[in-house]
Length: 326
Image (cartoon, rainbow, N blue to C red; front, side):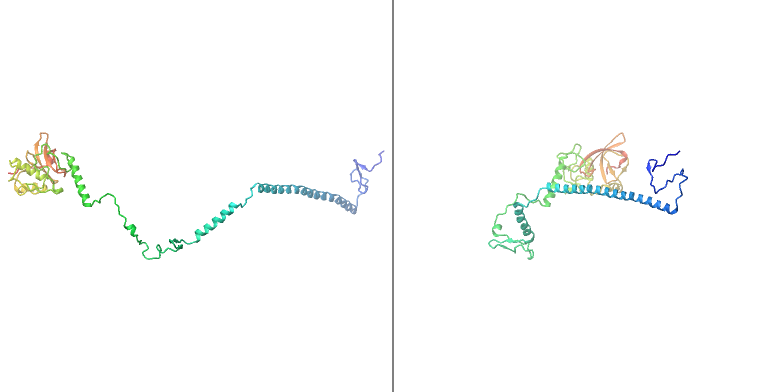
């Protein structure tokens, strides 16, 4: 026998208005449509309070967060107040005010006021002595007191161009003179070179203002030296000369070979002692000796335009040989 039913079902009190919907209660009457609608409206009323509770919870959370924001803003405001309080207050003391009063007028006076000249005994007036609007403003009148002062000068003299040129020429001569018996440059030797018997060895050449020798060639030229040797070999060492410019050859060594041919004097490629060694580059020399090794020793002047005496050895075929005239 079943026990009587109570108002509890599975530990819950059943609403007497809501029938049990369990399937094991086959004897429960089926709800009508109107009853089902009423039941749905009852469930909706029970759900609405839950949504209201959620809204109230959200508003409570927002209210709780608002004080924290106010705390942050208040903290920032207090930090600014602390920084402002830490800065020393700037005070306009008497010294600062006094300096401002002095500096500002000075700047205004320097920039704004025009320049004036001080006239003795007359205050500040515009300068007329140095006005740029006056003609010839650069002309200055010197006081008589200043012009009467004695003028002092340093102890130096002015050297003219002529004096400079003369000193340079003298220095050049002195330099050449120090190179005694050295070839390669003109000089006035202090003594005659060994082997040199040319009588005019210390005369000034034509390049430096010298004149003609007694043989009527210029002093210390190659042609004058060879003409001297031809006279010496002929036994003539003073005037009257046997050979000179008039009956020997011209003053240009380049023309001597043609002059020998024109006069019918012998020329050859074989050297002999006492012959004239002729070179196509306008030079002549005297053959001192013919050597057994195919060379010739010659004596000469002015071989390299130094107007000096030289001795050198050359191959036989280096020159054409003009035999002594007869």
